[in-house]
Image (spheres, rainbow over the protein chains, first blue to last red):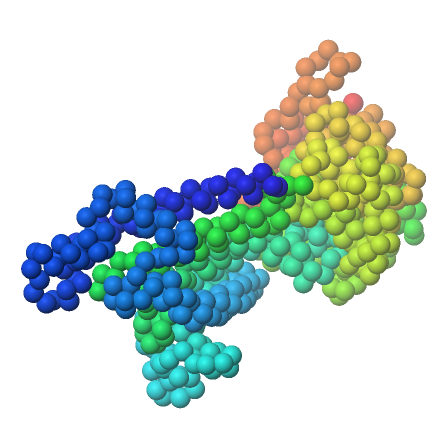
Length: 313
Length: 322
């Protein structure tokens, strides 16, 4: 178990280093000169541009720049935002709670709706299954921004049930302000999880041990819980891990649509103005979330299926 | 014997939903007395497994079923679900063919053995205690530790012992064994059979032993039913069946078994079994029968008593095979 964890952690570090390199390097492949941007359209003499380049270490060789940046990241210093003239770390920290609330809320919706809808489709074949297939098809195909517009139109403008804008304060305020964004965010992935749950449960249902359990006088609900749902958890947990990590990316759309000041919105505004330090930091955060989610899923797999090697005791 | 029948199947006919030409089971009747071991032998597709499963009330999805399956006097096909579950927990239990597929791979051995007991309301502690004793009685070493282990840590033979323990957990009066050793290799087959028959004798449990292997059935059973194309074609005591098979199909099966003591090579039954898509008008075996007379293809022979045995053959009186 300890060795398994150690190996996984080493893999995690390697992944993070590689992505840090890619994230940092991709900025240099993108068109546009940050120094020019910093002048904000004002005419600049070559001398001022050179001065700016020197100030932001833009003239150093790539390896040196990367080294400096990485060293900063490791000590929690992500550099200064060109746009806000503030520490990137502080900018993200201020916006992270809203984003994490949104992601957690959406993840909860995805899990509850996805599992319930998928289970209903798998267990009640026929009409229910047909409806779920069409419904999840539509849900999966609806982009978050379309869902956002639709939800705002119906529930904010027409019905006045939920606010259309802003973060909200306090627990209740957050929940009311984040409900529509969370639904918009969850829709696609809940559809996806419902489909995965459905097919995974159908596969588990066809297993012989399910009928064997029934033949031994175990009540139907117990059979579903212990032999069908339990055995279909593998694919469900894998997809859930990836989806929840991916939510961090999708928040950029939803936060922009609902005017939430979160990390996603910060990313969007930073990309448009080429605020490289912020883009780099947020990208790294997203990758970190993916790596973490994968690690959790890998740690959970042996508990779900004892035949998976790893944490076996 | 007639009064004390533990299992009594009468005129069981099962038609599949998906429009097969002939029923999977066509008027099957059989009985197992208290403590008796009865074989049900036939080729794959003969309907023997469907018959075995019907005793637990397990029918193919959407099948059209007529006839009755009485266990200790109660028709399992007509029982409400709660009563059917009770019969499954206490009266009848099945040893399935493939233990690897029949035992949930992600749950512990103890979970499997105690599942039926706990569904019946036995407290966990008592159920585990019973399971430990059962595992010991089927020859699992360190039964207490085995309860905590997972199926993939056991060999096929050991897992089939676990299955037997699980089947015996509810103290059933009738055991169904559906090809219980087919998935095992030969040496473990013998062990599993001896455990099964020993425990069955100790507990006075009746058994319906479903197999395609006539010799295995002979080694285990008091009486044997032979099935062909969804019907019982012959029924006799094991000794009688081997000495004087009355149905040409039974004779064919016996001749098809390789024997050490005989110099003759085994002769297979020519032709192939009747598929569900075909519904021959007369005797289903007529097309493969060496003794088929013109009348055989026209008229369906009923199962009738001939010289103290039951056989479904028009020419049963004239033909005695050996």
